[in-house]
Length: 604
Image 1 (cartoon, helix red, strand yellow):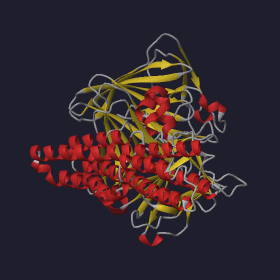
Image 2 (tube, helix red, strand yellow):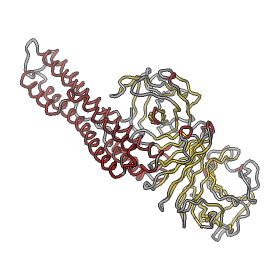
Image 3 (tube, rainbow, N blue to C red):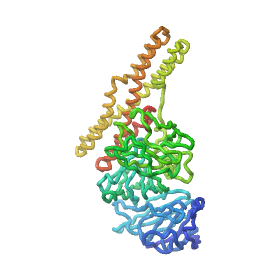
């Protein structure tokens, strides 16, 4: 094995790593490269050492193991191993959290280190290039880079490298979803040795009993992520994930903080109860909570935050811009659940609470998982969230494209039918109809615009359902062996038609509302008889019934599509054979959920 560094200038001296930024946040942001002097058989002795700090680009051989650090994380390449270890740097040393191992196209893992070279050592970053051999003697290579102030290791594939295995044990694996709800895999519920998850550019591994999260970000979206599982009973874990390079980069970031993630098991008897969690926010941010539902589904919510001196709560948009204020009772309404107390919040001290919703339409049972999804204005500069890592790795432009930010903006057009009622009824009660004729006409027009807008979204869902069911029928003919999966997808998709049929008589059509407006203008607009208010109320009530049913139907349709999207991903994990069809369904669901109407309540 050849273990060397390339280039011309060499300067090295003895310096204990513990002195590098120990207890000094500012001092921990610089790049440093170390030679341990002696190859370690296992974990490195971080607390006490006489390691050699390498300045510049050395020409001599490496006597021990290679350590690259920026004060936040350290990447360690040991001569007696075939992995890159990612360590979290702390004031008294560091702790290993993740192991990265290259794999060949045949799926063979790196078994031994063949040669390595330091190809970058600057103030901005440090990079190791390494070549390994599999047990069958096949060479696979890659480079591993850390940047100043960052928490990610960038992995570039070299000759023979087809996949990256990320070894990070933990009970859960999460695929964050910005269009619907996350897919959360619980190893305790899966008896399989491996599952394939739909690729969405990132996969999240909570680990270290709540103190660390490994986040994998990748440019390739063509291949699925394979997750391996092992163990029995309470010891069962997801041992890691395997991600295809497809000749593109993969980043593995380490989010480290006390209780940066937390889980709480919920029983049916907890429904409706206020539960004080054994958890406080390590820093203020937008925290996502994944509640487990029956049938292995997940319902994702953003935690409410409370400022000091206030009884109200703030609900931050995951986009990091809009903020909604909820009263002290946390009461909220949406088209599916009606009125309910928001189920997850933190108090002025950052203490977390939850209250599982009491509803026949939504039940929380099993583990609830909390993790930081996005930063807010008060998030400390040195704290990282999932979206921070995505932007730091992929870049702002590609990240915004992947998140499809503009498609999440909720649309509100015209005047809601309850608003039409609240404008027109007082005008006629005060007998002001002749003086405010222009305002009445505009309100009628705005109400029709609103009806057309919501009905347009309903038609989008109807069209989605029809096309998807046709696609599924074709796939069932082509793949009779997948009939059970296809039948379940078809049943879920059919729920769109079922929801529409249940409200068909009440939602009417935009043409019907246009005729109502015409008759109002003819018989009510200028009318000032004693029953003018009664006539107005008859119109506004009929319009409100139409609008209310449209609003509820649009929310119900979105709920159906969200469930279909998530269930397709879960079934894909259980049976890789369904992957092509499941991926197509998920792509279709994402498309129809773009540009939601406000009344769809896309984020609860």
